[in-house]
Length: 131
Image (tube, rainbow, N blue to C red; front, side, top):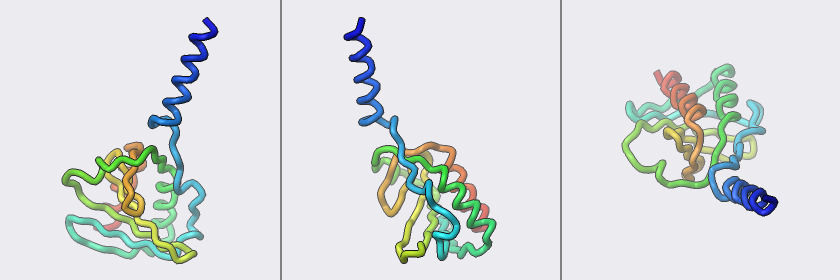
């Protein structure tokens, strides 16, 4: 009995480490004050917009705070989809590009498996802001 419990716990632990069980919150500490500039590109319709409204930027920050990524998975780069890309210029001069893509999230050209909810929120926000 004891041996079965130990094997079961090892299997759960292995799944959490090597599977999709343990996520990372890449934007959990992001605040409005960390961002200098936000631009948005949506294709189609091939439009670019600068996001300057403080409320809209805060909504974006709140959505990014909820993003959980799992393992890298390039399948999110495949397929035909509308491109919604937020480009954040940070206080330190770095640029962060975020693209929601269904159950994937591209962050600076690296593709990660993620939850659908935050991606859908970012995708919808991008489409609302571009129109």
